[in-house]
Length: 281
Ligand SMILES: C[S@@+](CC[C@H](N)C(=O)[O-])C[C@H]1O[C@@H](n2cnc3c(N)ncnc32)[C@H](O)[C@@H]1O
Image (cartoon, rainbow, N blue to C red):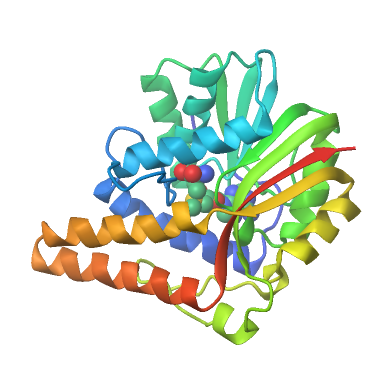
């Protein structure tokens, strides 16, 4: 089935995000094999594959949201659909709807869902997290693994999330934010991603957990929790890249080491990786 074009115009920043993830597609199978995750993973210990860590991160978000049989689940920034497949392995939802802004992810994700024979439960569609085409109160759970830092803006997304959730519905996501007191210049450093040459900084989203909590509250959320999981996500991911580099050809090893160095540099400069939970009042 062809991917229906977006009906709403998107910002220049969001266009840059699409350029980046479209370019990243060529490297898709570098780290992940059968399960097409595209995240840093959750590493309770270092002896995991990238795929296992990707699944653990997804399970953590699902557990945090409290997904259960019969739920209507919205997976925002669904990538290639690997998160959605994990969700239906954990419970029997009424359905999982995934949206993502990058067309190649939706088209390849649909092939992946079809190969898993899960088309009756999971539908992926092109969509912008900040302007969703869903009616009010359409979902019990909204999950978003490692993508809200890209949204233009995250604040708009939080208002949309509250609109499409039923009262009492839950939001769970992982996100990248500056630590409290981080130097904004070190956090917004103008770095251009090596895969795409694009700078993905977005100043409107560069605020800490306290401001994040205020935005969640203003959007209509309660029971808010924001916890750092940096030590179990980006840092062990960088260590895993370094391990992989030791058994890789020279050129690839250099790329892996550069990415690992970059992650450590950004973490030292104040970047945090957080798990967020909130309930719609
Ligand atoms: C780091 S990937 C995570 C993908 C997936 N959740 C996973 O864990 O494998 C970030 C994803 O967010 C998507 N994205 C970025 N901005 C978006 C937006 N405004 N609306 C919807 N998706 C967006 C990207 O296309 C990309 O697939």
